[in-house]
Length: 279
Image (cartoon, rainbow, N blue to C red; front, side, top):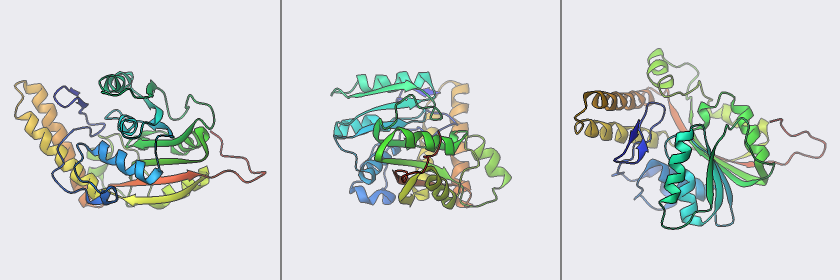
């Protein structure tokens, strides 16, 4: 469902509701600002600072069909890059975002899968992603593909869902994991292991679950407010269902069954004689 008023997708496979953040972004203090417009903008700023993105960077975004990190990065730093999305509709949406910018952005978008990236080895200095990779059917293969297209010493910085505990309750599985398209996920320790086995060195892992909860709280409130303004009963019911799903995520976080983290890793060159991980 596309919301014309906020120019973002609202659906139960993501959380793209744009809302004013009236709280201090505690989990993003390092950026020194709390006046962000959207959760994606906040994440883009944090990832850029942690990954060292600047005007010389060539950035690949592995995107979700919500909003686009790359547009912000290109605006702020003048970096070049490309974004890939599973949805052709969102590719067009992202292209329109660039067209409507005051400045010309040196970025492009295409439909592609992270399991088979359409780029030569070493094409990018950075790969970024926000809330997309946990939907990939084969995470180790995704990480291997990302490593392949990174240059030597390149940075992979992403935000993603993680599983705080081994056993997840049935309500959380049906009302959160299944509805939002989240797979079983890794624990933070499993993230460490899989990324290191793929050929990355861990730079930092930041638990931002509290920020995720505030995001879904804001999404639920915004959806309820929009529902109250809708004359069409079917559209109103869908918006209220989205709000209820956002409340389910908050409850699952409170039960310790959903977590969110920002992870920054560096491509480790294979020692002489060692075969890099296969894509």
